[in-house]
Amino acid sequence: MRKGSCTAAAVFTAACMLLCGCRGKNVPDTYRVYSDGTYIEVDNSYSPSTKKSGSENADFYVPEGMTTYYYRDTLDESEKELYDKLLKDLGTLKESVPLEVGSDVYSKLLYMIRFEQLSYTQVANWECEYNIDIRNFEIKFTYRFSADEVSSMNIAAEKAAKEIISQLTPEMDDYEKLKYFHDYLVKNCGTSTADPYSDTIYGALVRKEARCEGYAKAFSYLCNLAGIENMIVTGYTGVAHMWNMVKLGGNWYHVDVTWDNPDDKLHDEYPDIILYQYFMVTDSVIENNHAISVFPAEPPKANGKTENYFVREGTDVDNEDEFLFVSENAIMSAVSRGEQSAMIKFETNDLFISITTDMMDPINRLFDPIASQIKSVYGKDIKLSWTDYYGQYRILTYIIEYEDE
Image 1 (cartoon, rainbow, N blue to C red):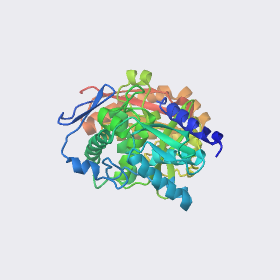
Image 2 (cartoon, one colour; image 1 turned 135 degrees about the vertical axis):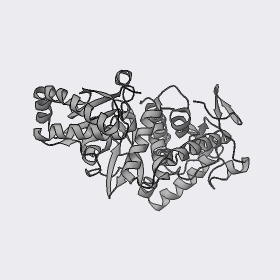
Image 3 (cartoon, helix red, strand yellow; image 1 turned 120 degrees about the horizontal axis):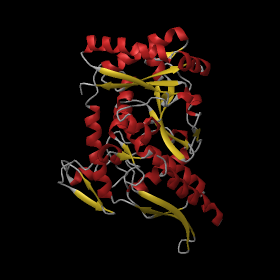
């Protein structure tokens, strides 16, 4: 085997580091595991034997719902066998395995496991070396967490996720469940590249700090628990990036929770705002500023529009005559749900420019009647304003301030 076949391993390690670049402890201290100066705290209501029994492939506890399948189904039978073997090797924290195929295949499989096995947070990196004793190359793994640490993280994440799921109601359809997960993460999880757990579900749901990988894995886990088909997809937005795709009504949609979390400037000005530019969107929308990767396998096409946020909420504007009506309905609907913002989207750039240039005085004058109507219907005193933060995407955002809160 040529030594050059190990090049993909270095690419994989470098890519992992790139993904780390994209953009709490309030639980009982009955169980702690220390790692790198930080500690994991969980409610230790599970027995030690339970922590080891979550998966036949792992020495740590694997909660139900922490596996998402899409990429594995694209493999041929021999690759699936290797995937499953590698899954067990990593689950038992094996330090080295013989290199049975080209390292490019291992790179693909390791990526798949990283995206689909949401509980597998223990791998730091891997590389291939020539072992003179076996006269062949082998893959050597290094791990950042022990099996006990991974168990503790998974137990805590499972508890947090089940608390979120418990807030769903029988009346909610899948779109409403997805919106609830999206909004929960935006409101409750900050962005961090420094926290050592920010690429994990534990980081997003327990420590409440995450980067794109933590957001994507937490969202995928919640979708799994709700029975909604989904997958994690990667690409580039100036740096390597990770987000989600979900399947509703036979169509796939993109959801990027990280990019719907307002940046520091907007958050400082409007701390309670939630954005929906990247909630349930098509390939054409996401590709405005995301390059979709086809590695480790090409993701499905996303062309559906019926479950898009603006279509579903009735906040898309096709002509000038609809503008005031759609604006009023969007604001009223947002207030009925206790939300702090409402977004509307225009069909064309010309319509957006025309409205924002010629009709902002009329909408500003409409704010007082809307506020009066909301006071009458909901008994709430509000103050309305607007921002064109997403103006380049034909989106106008109304800011709702509740003066009695």
